Image (cartoon, rainbow, N blue to C red; front, top):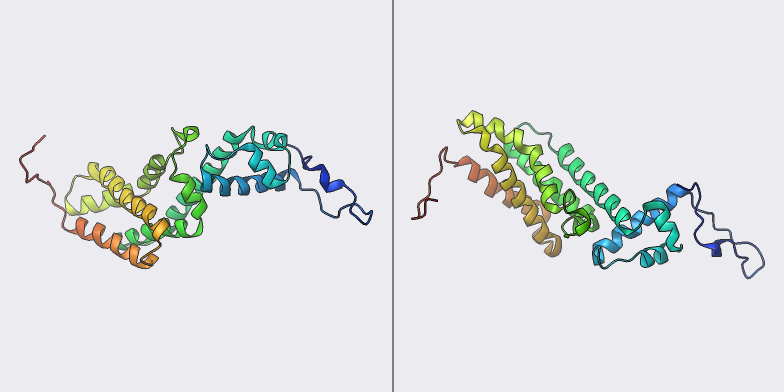
Length: 225
């Protein structure tokens, strides 16, 4: 990777007063971060297919080869953006689970996702889009699965304490996290009611559903398979 940007030659052109422009060249690291920031915004607004290397380069004030030099192309830039956002969300969820009581842990998990949506809106928009570049590891479904893994142990302990089959904890973890995540997608656009109310209602449904859980749930309709 280059230690300084070789992109826009206009940075070195004399000004109208005959003096060279005072703008400092970006280092390679600074240029990389700039391209990531620009890509993040464009991918959130237009998706992977709707964003071009030409537009990314133009927004950064560099030539197309600079983008290729740092990321190998649009795919490489997108992959780094998605990876950063996934790690950011997973870190927020993991760091947020600090309480001892299961109900408070559910509240913290709900708040962690809603906080991420509020603070990293562009990142969340990118994560919930489908893209051929990240079908295997960067999809919203895989992200939900990763987060659900974080709460499996919590549910497992609760199931054992209540006499339920702890092997079913992964299923319930997926269901609970999926509920919060899909509600988050809806809240992303409407932003009503306020975040604390959304978290309270999510936990109300999840907790009281768990509180009245049947050890061996039964179907009441005519279908049995």
